[in-house]
Image (tube, rainbow, N blue to C red; front, side):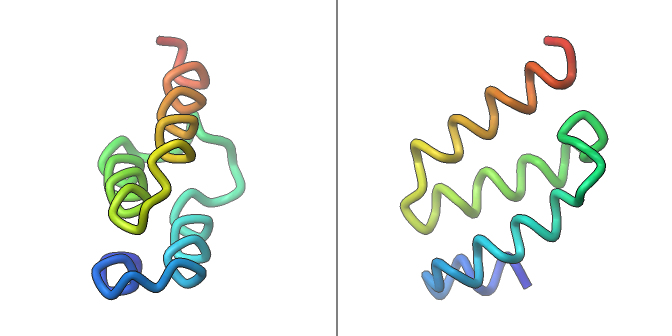
Length: 64
């Protein structure tokens, strides 16, 4: 899954697993543990800017 894809630096597969993990109901509906996992794995494959943007969007969606 997401962890294995990221650890093996498979960028495309990591992105696809991240999208599936986030679902389609909005970032405010994503479990915080899942969000942390997705952000961590995106950073692992070199998507630092994108992971920061996702974290910011999730915080805004959660009303923080």
